[in-house]
Length: 339
Ligand SMILES: [Zn+2]
Picture 1 (cartoon, protein in one colour):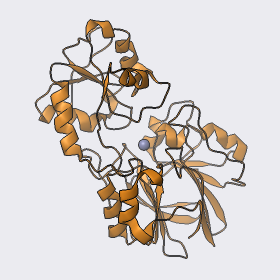
Picture 2 (cartoon, protein in one colour):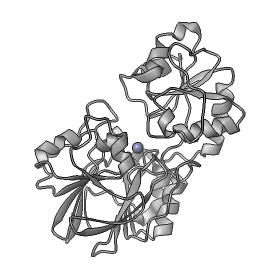
Picture 3 (tube, rainbow, N blue to C red):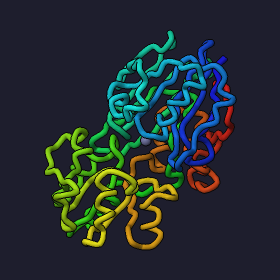
Picture 4 (cartoon, rainbow, N blue to C red):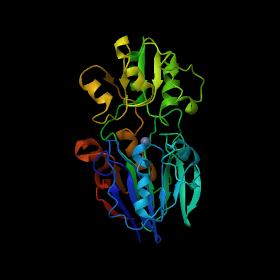
């Protein structure tokens, strides 16, 4: 018997927590918190968990790891870079390592992994099941130049990131708009362990001279001038953390907004964040920068892997009629699925 139970992550942009029962093992795939502040999975139905597998280090996939105490402290598995990118408080004392790609065994269960094109060291997971195989993408993107995506093996059931629902704009078009808007200087707040390297390189290719905060420097593969709260000027193009102005250099420069710093946010913007209020009042812009799949990418993944059932995660499908129509009979919305 194999069964998938969505404890959290279906029907809305809620934290990832999926229970996979397979060959007598109970694996929890991700254990996130947010992105809306304080939203955590309800683990009251989780029962015994033998291992937790974390796809990448973003908070909505790993920030509820302290809740593992409720599950009897099962061992946690992730890639080395994912563990390294977790905030120290989330890092488990014992780190069970998964490869960035290839095969591995977790408690005797064979699985296949590959890079998901979304964050450094972030992976999708594939497991053989009696019903023809199962793939969980975590978050994924087919559009990143700097982060590779490798197509997973065939699987009958695909649990896929669909965070953007119907959105089908291309990153190439978003880049042109962003480069134009940032001319003359802009602060571009970003999450760590995400699109920093990709955005820096593409803005540079578009003729801009981006600068970075020290927090983003370790994940960049090109050398860029660094900027701090003391040296920043409004005429610079500044890539910095935190993504919604709540922390990092972005928060420091928000306090100096009267000096002429312009802000362009591009992440999911939860209510209650500085970005939310600034955008709502017209004092800052929001512009798209895809780090999740377009509608066409979800369909491409489903087609390439031969999925007969596609479970769209992290989205409200009532707001994505075009994606629903494109998936047709493959669309599967139940929280419990036999695999
Ligand atoms: Zn993510």
